[in-house]
Image (tube, rainbow, N blue to C red; front, side):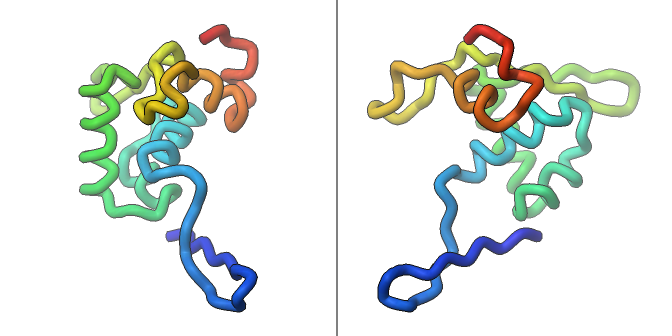
Length: 109
């Protein structure tokens, strides 16, 4: 499990990141579309149950599609999905994928 620690100007230590767990799960799956949720959860630093719930949210929101291949799942990301927050609603998640995953840098959103 990864722990992020930052020190503010006051010398206090607080744990936070710029991306939500949903964003981290989406990026982990974009990097490895056949990853087991156990491995995604470990990479992101959440429980396997939390990773399952996040994947269900992303699937319901149309950001990814899950396909059963043998005994495993394979995920397909929808890079043209829009961000949910009104401040970024005009942007596609493909922009985020291009920033953090080299394989998606050449894809149009």
